[in-house]
Each structure stands twice: as structure tokens, then as C-alpha cells.
Length: 420
Image (cartoon, rainbow, N blue to C red; front, side, top):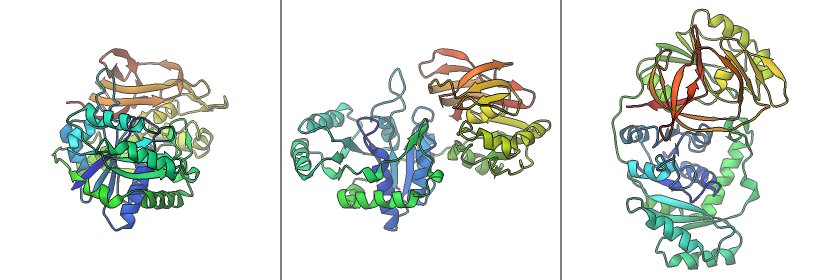
């Protein structure tokens, strides 16, 4: 098992497109290639999975121990890890959880994708600075992205020759592979009817402009680990899963199944009945975009009935659906399940973002957890007992998070992994 980390000096450099092109091209060549994503990202991994034909895992160097990361990375075939933000960007105060930390945990080298659109000779200083910044992180190669012309490429290559770091490719600007996005990131993979065509185009672009054979020579053995995974919160779990409830972590669902739980997916948007279960798990997603359809499908009424006999846990978007009402971007209020005294609004947007540590004494996620918060919804009203005490990444106390009432539990925190 070998791998490499695809990182960049900053967000927006083109890591995702290059990674998807590599995954698709290597899969087309018959390799059992796999993708992984650094950090708390629900959207990019779905693209990785389609590009490679293999499941993609989140590897989070802030929320997970090195042993946990290595266990999740295990598998057959080469592993292409897409970093997040800039190579050394992590959580405050010490940038813990960066792509560099992930490279350290896995023992892998880094290929740096650089947006060269507005650069010439200065690119050498930038790349040399990243390569020399940390002695335990190896920048083994560079891929130039958004190159303007053959002449521009020649200037960049000559400047980089002094660094001794190989240039693995020079990818030109290509408006055909710009991906549509919305408030939480890229438009989801299953919403794109042109997804396969896009991935094939990305692979063709990478084949033309990146030396994949040389990149494969830079793959290093992935460090191995053993970890038992998460204990399931119930024996039989009904999992909401569709475009409105898409943000569940594959590693968590896989752990539950591996440790003996039965996990039964169902689609609220399609009007699927809620399966008989010990726990109904409503993950995050985009309920603010589908609120009318959620109500029209009959799911809200089904959820009210299920709450009489079954534990229900809502996370972020799922939490919003469990409240009394949800106000969409147009200012229209939609009656939700009323399981919690909660009113939320997407019309009044405010970004809430950051790692959290949360501790609960009741509910399916009682215990001490590493978590993440990323949403734009505003809480208009929240009444009742809190679910979690919370701290930010720097250890500062935050207001209590979430609510609990009867058999209903929820919060805006996305649980990632158990804290040791």
C-alpha cells in the first residue's frame, strides 16, 4: 500500500480538480486507486469515490489519532490524499490538523499544486519556502496549475530548476473544468448529471499535462495502524440519506456496521417510510434547499410518530428539521417536526465554522467527542436542556450546544471521532 498527499500553498489552487483527474486516469488504467480527503469535508469525498470507483475516507489530523488515521487509510492499491486549505494551515493556535500533519502521520511525501496564473520567477521562492519550512515534510514534486501559455510554462520551469524539485506537470487554464459551488462547497456529486463527463475531462487534462508515471514513482509506503473504531450507538439504525441529508461520515457508518449494528438507509425526500429501528439518525445536508419537499413527502409527520417510540438524533441540518420551524433563503417558514423547541433561519445567514470538542451525558452520543461546526443558519430561538458542553479548538469554553427533549437529541456539531 503506497500513497501521496496532493497539497497546495492555499485554497483555490486546484487541488480537487488535479486529484480527481489523477484518480480517474489511474482507475482508467486499471489501478485499484483510492482517494482520501484531509479534514471535515463531506462533499469532495463523494467526487473521489465516483472518480476512482472506490470508497473515499476522511482523514482528520485534528480530530483523529495517528493510529486511527493509519487504520482508516489501510487498503489495497495506491492512495491519493487530497489536502485542505494550504499545506501548513490547521486549527488555531498551532495549526494542528493541517495537511502537513496528515503527511507526517501517514509517512507520505507531498506534491504541491501551485496556482501559477499570476506568477513568474517568484514561484521558485514560494516553492522553496514550502519545501524548506518543515524538515519532516517532504515536498517531492510540483504541479503548476492555471498556466497561461507555453512561454509562461517555460519561465516557471526555468525558475524552479534552481530548487531541485521536479515539475511533474503544467496544467493550462481550462474554463471547461470549473466546478459549480454553493454556500457549503461544491454542488454535490449526485446532483451533477454531467459528472462522468466532467471526470473524464479532468482525467484527459491531467494525462496531457501531468507526468503520471513519474508521480507514481514518488508514492511511498503508507504507515499502518490498528484501531477498533467507534462503538455503535444502537443495534439497528435508520439512516436518512439523500440530497437533503447527505453529510454522514463513511468511517462512522462503516465502524457501526463492522461492530455489529444494522444500518438501514432511507430517503426522506422520496417519501420512504422510516425503517423500524432503535435509533433514527438524521445527518446534516441541505434541508434549507429542500424544506418544501421534506414537508410534502410526509416525512415530518412520520418523524413525529416515530419519536414516540424511538430515539432520534439530528446533526446540523437534521437538527434543524427536528425543530419547530425552518425559514428558507426566501424568508418562507416551513413547519418542521416540533421535536425540539428550535427555530432556525437561512434567510438570516451567519457563518459558524470551526473545530469543537463536545461532551454529553445523555443521548446516542454521550461521551467526549471531536467535532466540527460549519453552517450559515441562524438560531432564532432555542429552549430546553442543552445536549453538549463545548469548547473551540483553542480550548475556550463555548455556549452549550444542541437540545434534548424526551427521546429527541440534536445539535449543530458534526461528530467526527471519539476523544481519547
